[in-house]
Amino acid sequence: MTATSRKTNYDRRGKKKVVLFFPTPAFGHYRIELGLAIAVIAAPLEGKYELHLVDERVTPNYEQEVLTNLDDAVCVGISSITGYQIKRGIEMARKVKALNPEIPIVWGGYHPSLFPEQCCQSEACDIVCVGQGDVTFPEIVETLAAGKAPEGVLGSVYWTAEGIVSNPVRPLVNINDVMPAPYHLLDVNRAIMLNQTQNHESIRTIEFHSSQGCPGKCGYCADAQLYQRHWTGLDADRVVREVSHIVKSYNLDQVNFSDANFFANQNRVKAICEGFINSGLKIRWVASARPDTFHRYKPEVLKLIRESGCKRIIVGAESATEPVLQLISKGATAEDHLKSAQTCRDYGIGGTFTFITGFPHAPGTQPEETTEDLLNFIEKVKKISPEIRTKIFVFTPYPGTPLYDLSVKYGMPEPLSLEEWADYNPATLKESVWVTPEERKKIEKINGFYYPFAYPDRNMQMKLNNGGLKKIPYHVLHSLAQARARHHYYDMPFEWMLFKTFKKQTFEPIA
Image (cartoon, rainbow, N blue to C red):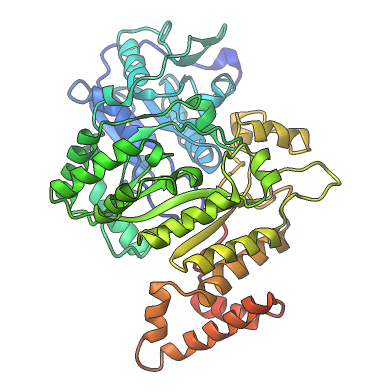
């Protein structure tokens, strides 16, 4: 399709439907996190338009649900991060255009916000909603319904036959001025059921978004680019009120805060915990923290965090080597990581520490931190507390970040279109320039199998202490893993191969 043959029609007068599509974010089976991104932008439109929120992972006959509602639609919205979600979004956009070439397709999310003009060059995208969509997307819809292109709508970029039009950026909106997420527009119960049946979750868990942005300047994180290190959080009383509402509405056992940095404001966290306790809310919760922040919390606040139901914190440690921590502008040290692990242990709070391997380095040079360096440090964390889980991700450069630019400088091929970005998956990219297949296997073997058996947490202890013959293989594996960890010898891993053959799982896999 050439630019002159595109038939997008921005005059949508008389149309009464808005269709929002959330493509599956990754290939394979992953835990379903609610598509809150499309729910939040739909909230201001409720009661004005007939809304159809379609989640590829959750909505039965999702394709039919999109395609049968095009005739009376103002537009179709697609939410996307970089990678596989783009691929699935493009596939749906092509089917939409095949049935109705004139219908405007609006993209939003991290990737379109970072590359709006490039996205609009694709026939799969007519308009990009840049950054926060809470105000911008409803304005785009109202403008289209009035029969006009989104000229002058702050935070929007759109295609025309004469060229791409970029409107001025919309200033960030305080999250407290945004309407509550309309969970009732999503099929929450089905998402929970699928997580229980497909991902073997034993409890009812969903996500809640209580803040946006992060004051950190990590060089690999798109948040710092999108929100310019600006953080804003919902008032504590609103968090308590809304969390209490969804817990009761959906009979939840746990709430996962999907914030980039839930613990950015200690006074707010204290007030939220006190609110949970004073309201009698019996709930487990999980949230993310920076390693240089959490261990500096006051003891009385840490006690409140535990007493209010905090089951686990997710700590983005990333590296344990000072040159790498400086390279990625982490603003934390290996000592911070260890102190945060000790804090988790001392206050009875579970921890999941995430690390990244394969940061870019110049061709012909050795990495500042080897896979073995990282695994040795993780063993130190495990020795502090076996209850701390550790996950290792392979670094893949996220567009719009300083480390992306460095990666291109060091030889990484740069995607130049929306279609090329569709084959770039930050979550599962296997052809990393800086991590070999052998290193990936080593990480999976040691961090995903031997460490959990050598340093058993409560769940593993239950298996070891289980009555009957079932505990025998676990005791054998525990003894072998302890011996291997003691001597740092992981060659000829026959027990790992047997375990993979029969159990088909690892506990802390590479991702």
